Image (tube, rainbow, N blue to C red):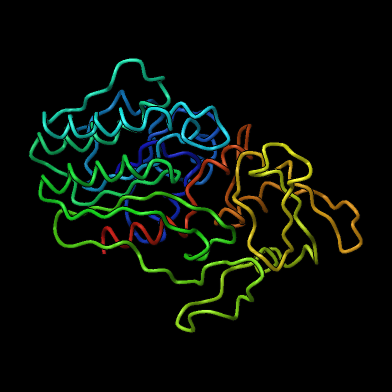
Length: 315
């Protein structure tokens, strides 16, 4: 299956675990270096330069760039949500992708999977399954995608999932869309309990596993506390703290700036690239390569979440 905006391989790692053949399209040289080192099938280039006919796979996956939709950015994507939703519906009615004028280039990429979907439908070789993920602000766009897909015979669902409920050792919310053409589809059921600050992880639904703590996957670190600026707007007084027996904060491209303290408050070495990757759900030996590795890690879809989404779409 083609994986649009494939990055360093979050969805691809999950696909390989499931025995699903996937070819990632990625134009960032650093992410491509990591992918090639990991042996992940890769086409270097811009997704706009390709069409479904260039690939033999019958499943589509992707996570368009999120920077203009996040709370940490300027909000250009969030400001354009109504126009983007209208563009999706217009494209569905016309049968071909429509990009509203005046959008910045990065924001408009959220419409690119729709071009692939409609192109495949028009060629009479529609994708059998589709998996898309983005930050929560994009949910209205995925809901409009679902309307277009259902009009073309797909079963489609979307919603906001919490990564720790799928075994990722961090709290991370993602808007997802899962669709399939050959039968009904539902969002994947959680396998782990939801993290609630102050609530012991042994509490909750006994049919679910406890959420995964940082200490579970970094046992050699010993006890530590994470001090993070994430979500604080840079205000030192608002810095969040989590102990190692809790999940990490959302892993972003600033993961290398996160401070670690021992029980006496002394500074510890910061997370290595391998450790940051593990917090994002990658194997410890994933061969991070090139430059801007923290950004590569922060931009990736956590493989355990991708595994759950791909299973829901293709099983």
